Image (cartoon, rainbow, N blue to C red; front, side, top):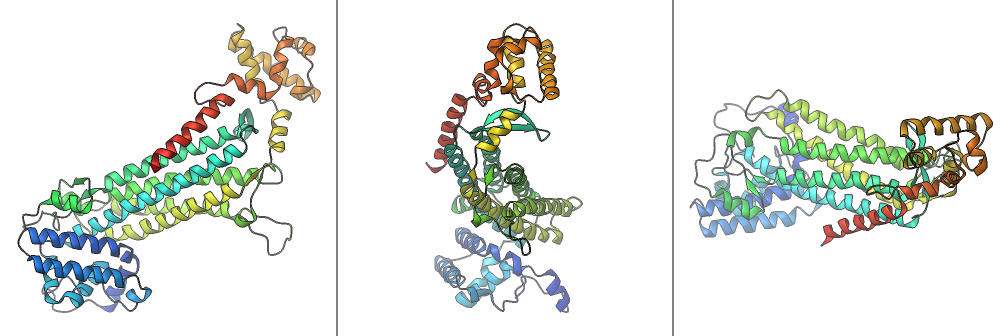
Length: 460
């Protein structure tokens, strides 16, 4: 069935129907459309378009349709233009002629906006739960190796020693910001658009605040033209999804590197790796590589909708139908990537000796020495080259930090007194970094407690 007609002497061609139809992807909005239609029926009753009995008949019929939709066969053979016409057709089959009243004072433009907003609110909640689950896995991994020391990197060069939990908490903080973005995306989607009509506002005196309360929306949209033209709330979700995927991709890149034979820090579980069809020895980090690859796919969804919207005149244009496939695909890839990342973290085993060896063989203690000199009164611009000279001498002679005897340090520079030799052990220098946010053992222990408390607040 069509929701329009009369103006046309002929019907749409088969090519047009096939090209413009959206049921194959917007069927994901079915439940939201049913709930929105039930709420609209109640609104129609309040303005006298439906009697109490008619509204009840429509609501009961919609519940039956909702139950029927649980069967995979429900959508088979459906030739409807979109999910909205499908619901109306099914409603008419169940409720009879009274179903014709349900579209009174309602445009498909506002109906689409409503359905996507309802779906997006729940998707944001689901994504936030999956982010929190990954955060819990990161904290579990941190607590399994609370004392492990690893090199921190800049420019992919060993820079300073950090605790493994401190490294994992860096990813935790990224994910915390992601959770906040999806909370904000949910808030931006939670504006109720019904009553806006096609673009000029409804000609019926609907109580829009009552409809908003009925559907659990926090706010009501302010401008009917904006409702018809707006897909910002979809872009907000896609941006949040893109940033989250960026963070997952960075974690994936790190762990792909850390699990190589050259690093050998991590052993990924058999359940998240695969082998080679030719090379029997291979254990490939396919799960992480797929996360990294899907990142570009989600970025593409954001770019796609940005390009669709950038040149559209107010208000609605059919181009805007192209919002849903990128949205649904991005949500699907994001959900899967979050689940996969959690499985990887749960399966991974840290080998603490290789990263500790990398720490001890490199000059990640150089900054600790320079800062110690500064604390004892040597201006830092002078302390920096003094320690740099020690590093250069070590490179020339092939010495590692712990190869230096306390009494030999002063031969490089008199400021390098024997007592500073204690800082050649990276675990000692780390204790100077007990500042909030630092990698000092006590600071990290407190950070782990705070992180756990933040996650517990989600569940309460």
